[in-house]
Amino acid sequence: MRNLFELTRDQILRSVDEKFIHHQQHEAELKDKLDLSSAQTSDWFIYDAFGNSLIIKIRSSKGDRFYLNKLSFRKEFDKIQRRYLQMDKFDFTTDEGVENFVNELKKLMWDIVENGEINIYCSCDAFLYWGYSYISTKKRYNYPSQRENRPPDIRNPEQRNSICKHLSLTLKNMDNNRIHGFVAEVLTDLYIISRLNRNEDIINLTKERRKRWWIDYFAYFDGEL
Image (tube, rainbow, N blue to C red; front, side, top):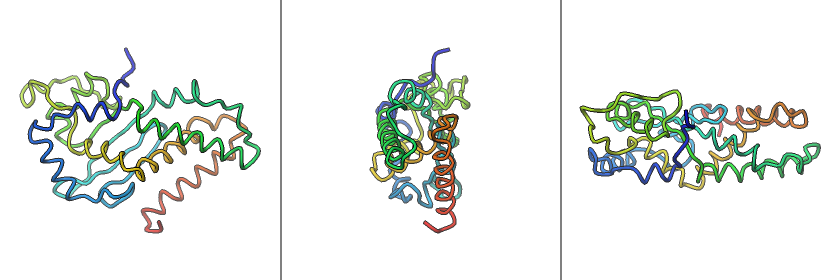
């Protein structure tokens, strides 16, 4: 089977049919209700992060629940170590060498968020029942564990549109430089934690960044940040 990763964030957004079931209107109404000013608000925040994936919680339009938006960058992660990151040019025995490595990796992550191929999923009813889960599976950008093989023959027989309003807002939210930078920082830490901890030269770096990430992550929800 071919790799599922086929479309970038921008390509997915360009495929949105704004007229289908008043997508543009509903998205605008939801945006007006939510605080999307930064990477972690009470309406939109990174709920979990692991490996190559982020899970973002976004509040519903009624305000009574949260939906999960899953984003995965696995193919792009694989490219980093294989093609872009020359590990032997960094000196991990010095603070300066470590910092140079982290900055270089962060640049790559920034580019991945902007231009990398991505898998997505939303836990809302619309994503499943209006056929976006099926459409995204067919076009190879659905989250791997959420593939859907049942076409929306009743609600959306022409298979219009590509994503729900929640995912549309989440993907557009990445254009905010503060959010973009925060996501790149999280992906940087995840890469170090999940991909590089077999390298003895950076085991200590991995431990320190893991500790700092989780301290910062939970401090936000404890109201300390």
